[in-house]
Amino acid sequence: MEVPCKKQLAKLFYVPFYGGMDVLRWHFKNVTEHLKDVLSIEVLKWLGSKQSWRKNSGKDHVFVLGKISWDFRRNNKFASLVSVCIPVIFDPYTAYYQYAWHLPEDHRSYSVYINKDDLKAKKVNVIKKLMLVTIRERKDMRSYIVHELLPGLVYGDPNANFERFRDAFDITMDSLLHKISKNL
Image (cartoon, rainbow, N blue to C red):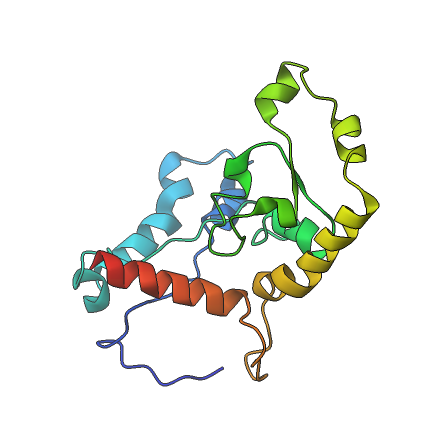
């Protein structure tokens, strides 16, 4: 997608640098610390040389770091939702707080929460807890995932006209722009 850009007017810049991929390149090799960090340092130097970075001392730039997996960009909670599975969450920070832009506050509408401390203390039986979720509740959760959550978790074709919903890109960009305008 080719979009004309006036860098001096832009409020947001995307730098497609995946630190995890760079780490993987050297992780199992016997190389110096300097060599392991060279690409990250080059990216930082390159950013520092740009007027758009210096304008706000980088305050309006965001690094997105991904984990290494089959798809290093996707969180496993998102993957389960995209496959219309009901995620079982043991730590609220792994989903509810971390993905507040994409996941609604009422987590009961799409997931089952089991407190990890209760689990460690053997105060809860996971199987029994999951069996308490009725068939009706499961159907409602899956329906909510498909009709409400899923459009905001996937990326739509940029040339398509999505009038009925905003995709993950729209939600992320709107949220980043809101956060930047609030902090500048």
